[in-house]
Length: 295
Image (cartoon, rainbow, N blue to C red; front, side, top):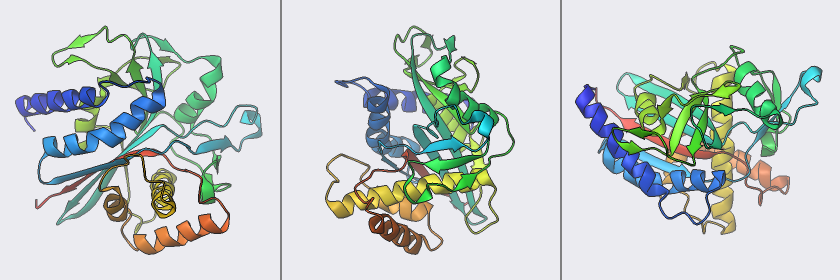
């Protein structure tokens, strides 16, 4: 993509993002995430064009990671993330996947945000990736994952929410910025640009198909997609689908989790119901982008 086209796309996505949060009556972190995943998909789909399908869902009860190392068990169990952006590219050559996991944080200074002592547990997860067990994650509770390498990754970043909008850019003031995990957070790129970079595999972290031998990063991403899909289907089954969760999200979850996905989803849905957890909303708010390419 040449720079002129990329710059225009960047500005278009930026304007769409800012439109999504216009008029929010409450401006807490979950409100911003809900606005992004429920309002952005239709706008983003129109901007990206016919080859792309975009869907999103908001899920409040986020899964957590309980550290297995006894030396870390005095820390609270951090949330795995507030928002998961997943890109899938279908082409005659096969399928490619990319993911960006984001932890939201409001700040008054996007270039100098210090992680407080009370949030150290989240920083440990994103910078050291110690072995952990899922908790508050439905049927995944107790299952262990160990992400490698044990260091920061472009696949897991902080989503800074600029309360002041002091810093201007050629496209205007941005509310959302991405920052690499560090004790002192510094905005790296605007979310609008990171979405484009995710589609070009210039940020995020790729993961592999479920048909292949999966590393634990890939397994974790599929885990998050799976429990989010279960939560969405449970909500529909129970008649709780009053909140907009993306008009085509069921089709998107089915597509993104294909390879016998319907059987898997139904099986896990039944497991949740058998344990009397069907009213729980386990999962992660998700933005799904699928491209069908002929190249």
